[in-house]
Image (cartoon, rainbow, N blue to C red; front, side, top):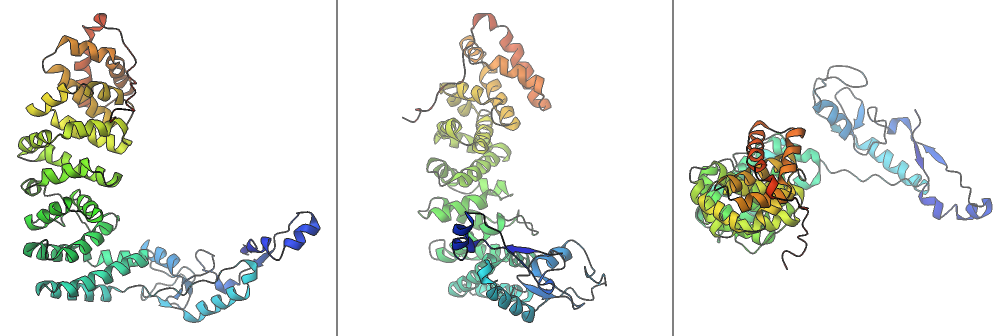
Length: 437
């Protein structure tokens, strides 16, 4: 098989004269890559040649994928591998680099000298030293080792897999907990460093489970403390990690957690931070034992109005989560009172039905049902019909939805049907462009 490299860069240089002579009809010249420079698996030019125990050389990325897929044989010889260790083939790599330099006029770039991937032994050794420094609360030494892990993590995907597979997440969480037990302010440097690398690791879907990284009250209190800080990066990392917390009961007991999350909503950092914040709030107001107390505290701090503003101009993922939180707040006395008083609630929620996602529509139906069915005020029911609620609910039944949503929808249709003659439907696509103004 012949693979070719196209002479692209030369179109502007050595072929300029030829273009003028031929009237612009350029012939694309090709160059054949030597067979022994190509990976037997991908058939591409090798960038990081490595040799297996069978003596066959492959490109590192290709052979690692082959082995990680569960294969235990050499792709070329089909021999069973006596060892999965791979050895860098520096001779072939230097030959490829020389060939690239010789053919640079054909637009071929010299392959860079690859970095040596980190080994499991190196990662384990750093983790051992990091825990040792943690026990003596040697912040300087711990910052050095965390920095080394961050460098490794940035270098390659293979390094990420090695780091993740050696339990580094758990080690970093342990170090974070140890320093947060002493003083947040005194050890803010190491805490911020660990926050950053843990956020990278949590956002990467690799092997190690990260759901129970922060379970102690000290770690959770420290994360909440960062929410109120001035460093935007640390605030964002803290809220992204709080989203992964599974011990929501312990989180609900942390002082100022409500205030910290409200600050993230009031002073948005970015889309991902807002989504993470809304997810955490949803957990707190939907599944904790003191959900009523927490929910009403959120209402007192003005969360309802912030949610409605978010629903007006937010992206779909944020709107869905905002509707979920608003639906939960309607379960509390203070929450339903504030929701009903706000004139924007009903028009906004009805407008978003069938426009965002099935889950968002399910939350929307729940909100509408709680508003309309509490006291069944005629003026509110007529307003809902005028906003097009009846037609949208009919469509939801026809399209299909979950059983609970279907029950709520049916209940609302029966309730609204008696008032249809008293109302004329109007367009619910209201323009909220200048709401904040």
